[in-house]
Length: 211
Image (tube, rainbow, N blue to C red; front, top):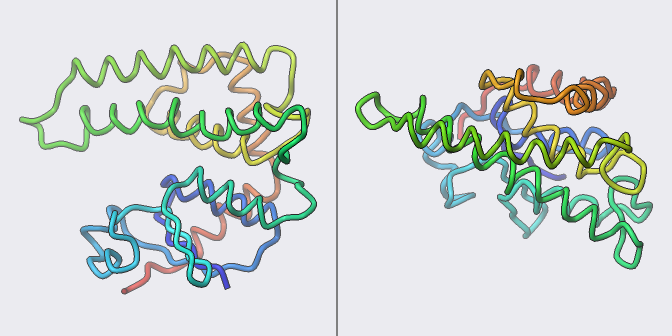
């Protein structure tokens, strides 16, 4: 059975959500954040000490976008992916990775420089610059959503999960007011999905594991 190492509301939520959408059986291993400090033995499984970490037999992945792509590749129906050769394949890949590389990365850096570091090491200027980068990139997303309900092939895919997580993180960091109306409405649509609610319930129900 698939094993997903997870921390509540961390990037690994993307993978948990997709597993629920796909109806896959999985074992959720809930860790306290940050796992490399709270569960040192986790480093034997994932030397990076980060979540998500997906273990599928002899295969271990620890990048959320890669895990989304890996999981969708196991589904012959392509219900949550756009396959190679399809005119929208490149567009799907672009948005799948935009959620992490273009949206989540500046948010994570903003959180680090504004909150995570000890007070004497924080850098308000760097945090403000990361915030500005995020706002610029959300404008790109806003333009893309001007005439579409979802980001690729006119339907819900794992690319929407990738982007939605970044928007959730932005709201958690107090940037909800920076989301244009169309982007906020898009996020609301995605969070109304039954599998989203199931993923939230799963992470709440799972006890913290002791490795």
